[in-house]
Length: 129
Figure (cartoon, rainbow, N blue to C red):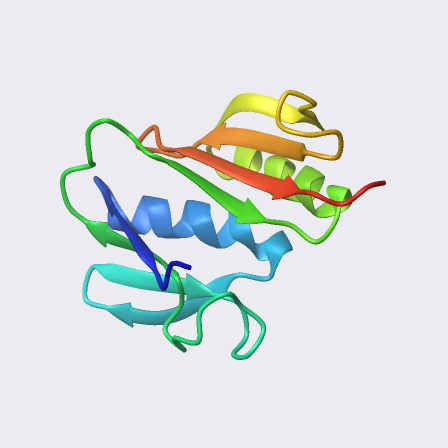
């Protein structure tokens, strides 16, 4: 449905390091960097966007208000757990430990962190255990 999304970040290098660590368990890596902007995606042919530069971008700038919520699909609950742990180790703030959120549906397993600018970033697995 979406090709890509871009967030403005107050400190590009700090945010780039955060997202490299947090998204690595989900298979994301920096696919392209242009000056103070970076596109993250999974290896070509395995993501949700055919753009080889990636579907998630950050760029140096004034963070958007209100802060948005971005959710990344995880293939397993273990990967949600790994995302959460890596995001916290990289300076994220806990905004919801890994767990089932039955208010969404019976198999909704997600974890939430606030990135360095306060964006609510999530990894979610919709599969049954």
